[in-house]
Image (cartoon, rainbow over all chains, first blue to last red; front, side, top):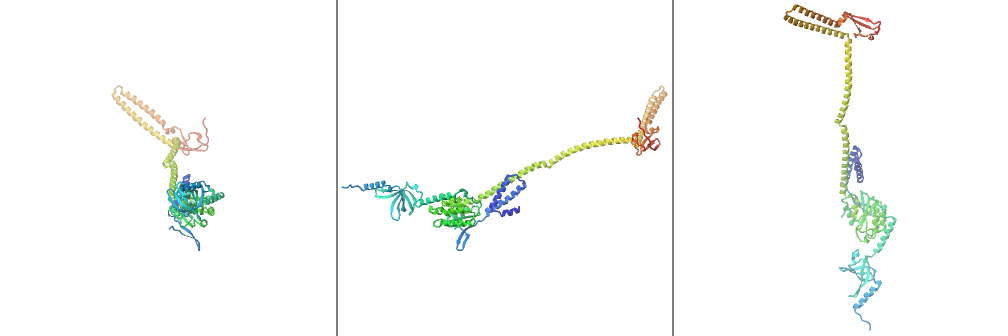
Length: 80
Length: 465
């Protein structure tokens, strides 16, 4: 599971939530053995935590493209 | 003498003349509004152009159909007729409808371009691309100083976090269309996930760049999906028709692209709820099967079945055992019976036993006889008649009986059997031979006699018929 935790850490939000959704559906469908059920549960918790972390602690950059004699570049953009 | 009329009559005749002249009625006049005044009765202004002017009035009954608020210096096209104010001897243009000038031309141009681009397929639903669910970067083409970028940034604060990259553009006036096109292309080269093209509300002229063909084509060719947010909710531009999604306002555009964060967090929670429910169900299911298995395999049950089996086994084995031991016991008994009968040692012991029993019997008989004798003697003592005879008779009787009993008993003594001339033959192991069938020719046998034994070889045998 620690291996999977490292894998999750590298996932984008989109990948994580998609995987989480698939796992939840698989578990809900039933018909799987207990070992797999527990594995799914553990993975899903990791994914949920990862998604939550992205939603709660994610940062965003606000920039504008500036074009002058030095060419094109991006710089921070603040609201006045 | 020429007719003399009143001033009022004159002005009335002018009024009638105006009214009867088609060239002065239901006509469009273009000009600029000047000296605008608004009264309860309506708008009063001067309509003028470079060379001339005329007073004009728009009565209040016509105002609701106007659709815009006239302003000083506004260029308009006014529809109406010449009217005469008889009391003042002045004429004026009575405006029944009015539109901002140029609008007709623009409207025609707009409709023509919309038709052409529509036929070309630029508005086709099949070309509309879905917006990314979780964009990393949102590109925005708008003025760096306007309300649009402000609204987008503030609205997205509470939403899924995406980077915002602004491509500042002129959004009205000369060169605006080219600036917007450049912005769209620039953001595509930056690899943004979605682009918002927009500007705030304004006049139809202000919004006009978004009705230009080059802007429409840039939106159509954009690799990243485009959300248009131009003007107010009621304003529609060609850009809105080409864009993948039309947002009513810039705030709306941010809300369409980025999901609300608290909503997403509760969605995550709902996944956990579903997950917990499913795992509980899975475990309960397994527990149930375990219980079924367990109940089948529980120690008590196992013991029960084991007990049953072992009881059955016990029963079988005890029955087998019993019958076996019965058989064995029976066999042992018959063997020992046979044995005792066939063993000379045992036979001798039996004989000694018999001898003892005979001796005991003799003693008891003698005792009994003595007791009897004494009794008789006692009785005799009491009888005085022929006492000797009676005693003699009794004694003779007793002695005779005693003698015959003794002889009989003596005859039963096996030793006496040998004494009487019989002999007993055993094999060399001491087993009594009672039949010629048990003998083989050449076999050595022991002959046991009253006073000793001798070994003899069987030389011949013959079975009695």
